[in-house]
Length: 392
Ligand SMILES: *Cc1c(COP(=O)(O)O)cnc(C)c1O
Image (cartoon, rainbow, N blue to C red; front, side):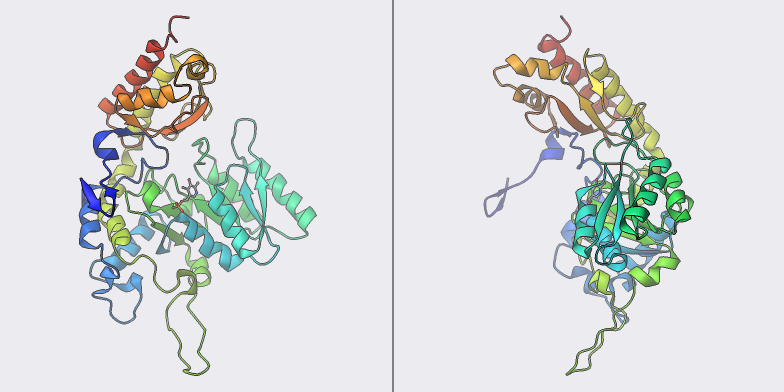
């Protein structure tokens, strides 16, 4: 099947078990697919935009209610939709970070947090992870004291990833936030791998901002995401425009500069909304996802030399493996070198691991059925067996 212009229809999730770490939580629901078709046209959500003209006030489709529901669901006060988690970081950074201001990230932070701070003119100070690849409240306090000494300024923000993208480790964001708050540093909770995957309670964590990614974790089209804030921060990051034209004296009322007025105007927003009822339900069943993950990991660990680099037992389905002493041994002499591994998986209908990687690689079992998890487990065992890893 072709879409025209040389574009082939993508049939990855239809034909394969896809364990790509970044794609698992973003796969569309059937309702989101319908929404994409119905609201694909430009500015299609604007049909019923009435005064006051702003995206989050539109009632048909129920965009205004969606904003309220998401705020309540995350136990925060105010929400806006944004084109990706990164645009949420950017809005917060542009509001609070001035030239040369130090901002706390961690040694496991995502690059988009770095770029948001760079754009705002700030400088990054990373809280180092410990030997277990965990960010601790103790290390946070040490780093804040170091920044105060060296920069002669307190950090103006702290971005903390609840689950990091490198290991899928779950950090004690509540305890880390408590430390930051003792220094009056506002905290951005990065929920790119959690909002839409497991329950998130912003007030309980103590976060000033909760950022989520629609296309990574809320079964929504890209680029989409949410920025949720406390009422204390709402007037700051969602301040309204004050600019005026010198000739026309025009002003722009309740439009918000950090949102550039309105954000998601069609398939992205309505797709995220259409998936939301199922997303709200699925976060209550994360235990099943961990159980499926365990099935696969136990199979991998039965292959001698195979190590899990992520915290174990797992608290998230995104997992980093070290197979230097197992699958990589085969690559040394295999005629396809490292590609034998991803090729063998693909032959068994499994995609999503970086082609050629046999040393360190990541995968995500999120969204698999138990049957698919068992199949995946058996596939890893079979590839190990076919390549002599059990006969040594
Ligand atoms: C994927 C990811 C992001 C970026 O999310 P977008 O919605 O694509 O902007 C940010 N932080 C972490 C930890 C991520 O894993």
